[in-house]
Amino acid sequence: MTFHLFRLECVRMLRDPRYLALGVVTPIGFYLLFATIFGGDPTRPGELKGTVEIMVAMAAYGAIWGALSATGPRLAHERSSGWLEQLRSMPVTVRQLLVAKLAAGLAVALPALVLVCVTAAAAKDVRLEAWQWAALVPAMWLGTLPFALLGVVVGLLVGPEAAFPLSYGLYMAASALGGLWVPPARLSAPLQDVAHALPTYRLADLGWRIAAGHAPTWADVAVLAAWSAGFVALAVLAQGRGPRRARTGAASAATAG
Image 1 (cartoon, rainbow, N blue to C red):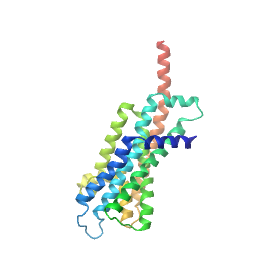
Image 2: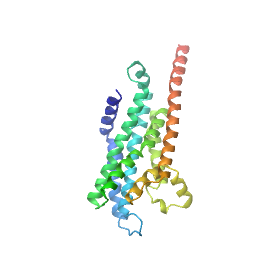
Image 3: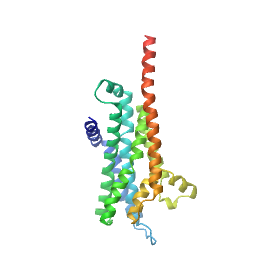
Image 4: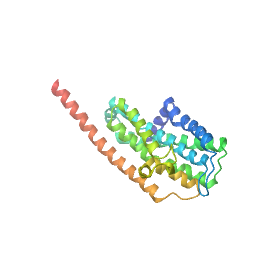
């Protein structure tokens, strides 16, 4: 049953023009724009070429929105409509639905990662070793987990009217502060400290290090894992509060009647 829910969620997202525009077309367009303007800047020894650095940043940018948008706004709408409560009378649990949404969030993060890399190789002649391509995409894909979890938290805590703007606001703020728009080395020292604590920077750093021929650092993995664990805890608390709120509301309605 979870697989069928997962497939349904993926099909719904792939038919959503807003996801296709923001999660696939936009990062490709931004990559072509920024790589054309800044990609030709000379680099010092040991630094990534601009076209490669921007490729990783925009791949992360698109993947984050895919993971976040597949979970937060949709879950908020379904919770508000009473769909999660209706599942209690079906052979489907809320937990199965959340797992399916989480898996779908990870799945729809993948097109941006792959297509931005393909665009970089085809349009800007980005060349990496075979092992680097084979490691970069899976590592960054797994690194989108905290953003899918964040979407679940948003979907469980806020209403449908606020879910999309909140998700998009968090997405843009975390992308800017995490160094996806401006190379982290060009940020001020205090902002660099902020960036290093954010999962957006750590996701991109996975790709930057692999593209430079190095292994990801334990700090990257630890920060992403810590954010994931924190969002899991928040999601469990939010899910636990949901049924109590629903029962309280039903009891109040019955009393008023």
